[in-house]
Image 1: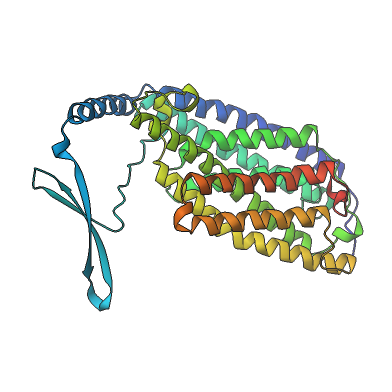
Image 2: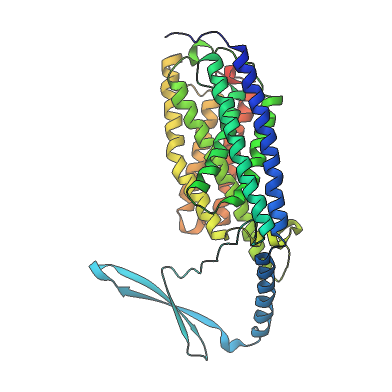
Length: 380
């Protein structure tokens, strides 16, 4: 196998400048997202949501002393075409004689919030500017990663600095991909740009490595296969982490509202939580992302084992990176199994998802920085 050519210093320097330029644009975009959330808190939809919430609390308080209005649910199984069955839930109001019949499991779906802009024209304008800046930052970011690879004529993720740059780019592109697919995901803009800035900031200050050739073990087509899938999985796991954390916050807010409180968790503004998607929507989104990416993470581990056999002569040696990759796999497997089990939906499963992401995070930063192993050549 032929080794790559010598380093091109001009392209390496251009890559560094493009990374800093992308960071500057991401920073401005992050402030624009912050303005969107700030102006949105004063928007007409947000105000109306607050008024409706107060009205609902007043009506609930007035209706509470009337036990005759108590509701009861009756589940009815009806024969359907083709020999199947359909479950219907009948909710009857005692003393009224009225009934409401819903299909499915009887769950009442909470409507999603209006989004970060909250109906404010100023907030919507700030959000559109933020999206435009994010696209510009992503283009500069792509150019930086490509220039880094061309400077040494290899795939640009041979060490932690390069991996971090590609990882941050994956997060941003995944967010933009959701917008292109017409998903109502602009509320993800602030946490995504913040995470991209933190990742790139850590990469350029602590993890930076000059553009250079790799050790012979890394001169393989498996570098493109194994590491690229790991980068994609990392970006997806981060997106799932965001939605899981927001789900826990939204669920806590809903419980506080039910208890008669007017603020969100940690005394945050109620307007922020009112504009987010419903807790059930966030929960489902997190689960679907993790379920979709888990097979790819499995493939990443298998591809790494095949590459290890080609480079070192053994498929598995319980190297720290291998061990923590397997621990991460087990953690996500436990989450998916628990999530599919009747008694482990909601907050319990969400805590498992956070623990699984913590394993992935330690596998990347902790193992590479603090633990010595066969993957140390990919360290700082």
